[in-house]
Image 1: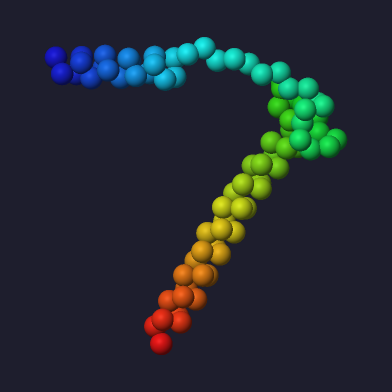
Image 2: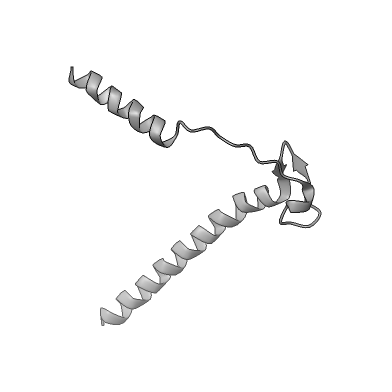
Length: 79
């Protein structure tokens, strides 16, 4: 009884949020952000691969910078 109600609520929330129609977007080579980029199946290849590399690097640099900053502050105040 309770499981059926939970399943009904989950399905209801799914159809309200995710269950709408998806609209495809066609990308031309002219609309790719990187010059000399090419498309495969409507994906800008160079900019997609660049984001796969750039975003993790940015996250790692921010994490290492924050760790160095907190280590420096701790060493200053531990004296």
